[in-house]
Length: 263
Image (cartoon, rainbow, N blue to C red; front, side, top):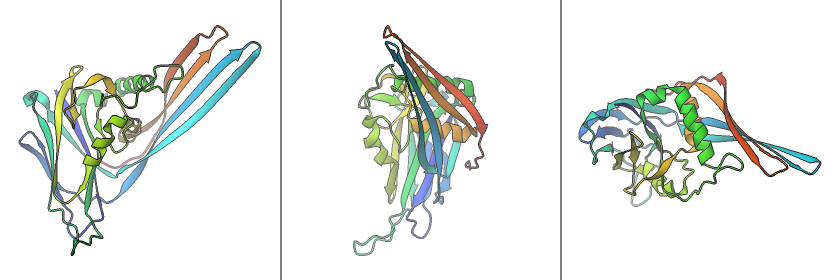
């Protein structure tokens, strides 16, 4: 099966030459490039929660609108990779080389920090099928407790974060992995390739995967940015006089947006 590997990259506090990045699947070199991007961009995700309930002869209504804004590197690498040679021990390896700070007698003013955000692995056919991805986003809202009266999400559980990692984890169990996405000096990031629900996914740690995939809300904003269109998730819950909850979730497409971020 064909997959897309997405790698956003950014350099902070540059000192002299920009570092080199090498990407591997197992021991196969995919690409080598200069990490010279020092800019970030903003991405938004819009969400509206609509609630109605009734007590005796009085009816109540509440509408909450929310826009989440995320910062992400202005450049991203997109690689098409084939899973035919992957096995239970396969990995994605990211090496940063020639990354020197201006360390002088223990004093450092330019640390030359490299950030990778996001690191995503998505089946090619799924990524290109916006209808299927939108259904996944709706399900993720329901699983994450976004729907009033719906399933409450435990932010400390160890569900798999799909399609990978960013610096904006909703799942607090992944906060420890966020620090692995940025470092100074020469370093290597190893990411395991595993399989569940019929697809390969990436996982930094070796914890056993639990339950359905968790999708960070950063991913909602990122997908809109990459596919150059906007959507707005709206949930509605109505509690009638018999205390019966009726909840719905809808995704509304809005105007396209203009982006230019792929190498």
